[in-house]
Image 1: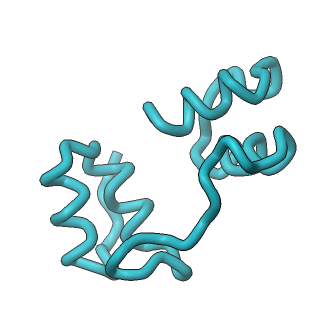
Image 2: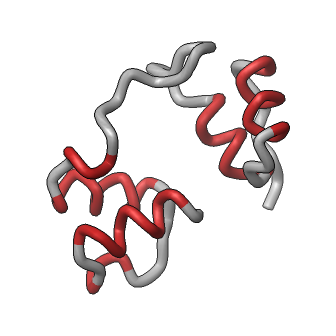
Length: 79
């Protein structure tokens, strides 16, 4: 997979330093509402299953339609 251009280089580097994959770090660093200090989203545990599913869809997580809330959280955190 090719890495897209990085919008927020500092955030990308910080995520890579935390051992995020190149793809995941790029996806996060290119999110329009992500700030340099991190996003302001609620913890996944406070999201609805529907919201988690939509996030998993954006992240192209396979098998998401059969996952329950706990499985979606795990998949999103470990993608």
